[in-house]
Length: 252
Image (cartoon, rainbow, N blue to C red; front, side, top):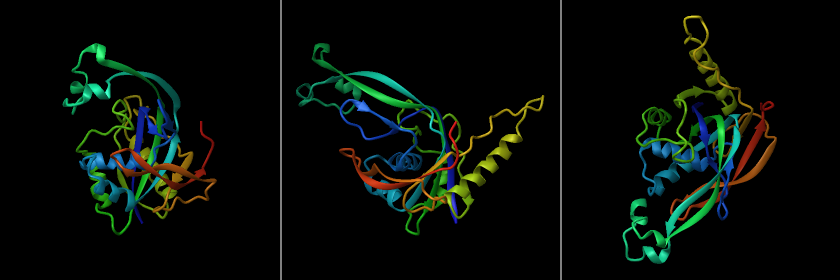
């Protein structure tokens, strides 16, 4: 069966997790809400177009092959915001509008935000018969995205091309192996005058996580519930979904 496979690498990434109060944690690999948002941005879908995002959520299966979960970076974050009373009867469509009040009316909020340093993973996407976009169309959108792509936050741009490829494989595990073999061969072609490779070889997949709609391949070592099933963009509502995780080899 055909699967779309692409890579996500960045010096900083933020794979959002359940946030309570002022603490904004990060999972160590992306969930379905992030992947749906990434594909939506590549296709040029507006955030308020909930029906289009729901189609990406419901008619495609997703699997993540973790190469490196990266190191945790915790940021102490401060921001100025006006009170609700100050915003009444005033336009505040932009950040500039929000701050266009006397400084003594601004409040300071504190938050802690987590990032993952030097994380890397592969993503496999499988389409059902009702998917509104062919895998080739999704791949082309990732090559030439309509909106700027970032990995969780706007301060986290990809560090390498996503290099989307259509692989024919029975499982996500097999698709990842074929993708890495093809990518390694391509990297090996590019060498300097002394014969040394110009680029570092991609890392092996150490974990695979997948949900419904796609066959992961290995027997799961863990089946858990993850709260990253996007329901409504307005209000940031997320539901539970079942996720399977298989440990492939020891992570460095």
